[in-house]
Image 1 (tube, rainbow, N blue to C red):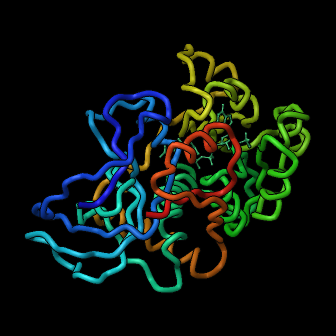
Image 2 (cartoon, rainbow, N blue to C red; image 1 turned 30 degrees about the horizontal axis):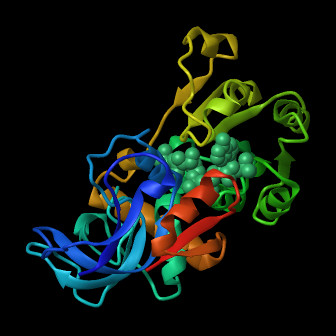
Length: 324
Ligand SMILES: NC(=O)c1ccc[n+]([C@@H]2O[C@H](COP(=O)([O-])OP(=O)(O)OC[C@H]3O[C@@H](n4cnc5c(N)ncnc54)[C@H](OP(=O)(O)O)[C@@H]3O)[C@@H](O)[C@H]2O)c1
């Protein structure tokens, strides 16, 4: 029997237990994937703590790269031995092997390693929709990225830079500032030392930016709004510090007739066709070298709790993978 992380009640990282689990045959439309590397994401923390509701018990993890070892009924285009990855599985990936929906899997070319694939699917597909769909970043734009040295952040900075944008990013230390700078962030701002609203205004000569990508939530609200130019777009896509509090819509008028969206990957890569289009874009920028997937932390699968503690404590940069 394969082993997996199991959460029977929500709470602290210690609720994640490493257990043998029974894995049946793949169902209709599913394949069994033997995990080679598993991505760790902030959403896994939201699910473990109960901020995002998931029926209990569950195995966390929505990002994995592995090899198909069994194919269920009705699956087309995948066979035993194919190397595949997912970023939209939702849950179930913190496991040595899992039955996954074939429609949520993408074949991975050999130039991309198991760890890179496991680290890039959820985060890289998120960046694809953020900068190619939610707001189309173009040459000449100056954009603001919160948490620029994180998993999503490093990918976002590099990809936006490759599209010709000037990237301003916030980070929590000088080490992270240097890392962001070497990954396409033209103006890293260490928010522990500098007021990021003032710096953004100074860099943009008082105008502000057309879009803010904010994954921090509570702590950067409403300051992120103050970085926007008139009719700019506030993209609040995460809650690393807690959710954005309720606020009156009139605030958007007062701060410049702003737009706001609260997107999620699952509404962008919501069909196999959308997923394939987005994954093609991602694989292209990674293969070209425009975006390097920085897997800066490896943990054994059984040590998932430690990975969660380090991610929540802001000790990590770039991507984290669990090794089964
Ligand atoms: N909506 C979507 O579709 C979607 C998809 C993927 C990810 N996300 C979101 O994107 C964000 C980034 O995810 P990730 O997995 O790549 O994580 P990450 O950015 O690697 O880690 C989070 C970073 O946020 C910063 N941070 C600021 N305040 C924090 C706080 N109170 N607690 C913890 N961290 C804080 C820290 O960087 P500093 O030290 O530099 O401040 C930390 O390293 C998360 O909010 C996640 O939910 C959203």
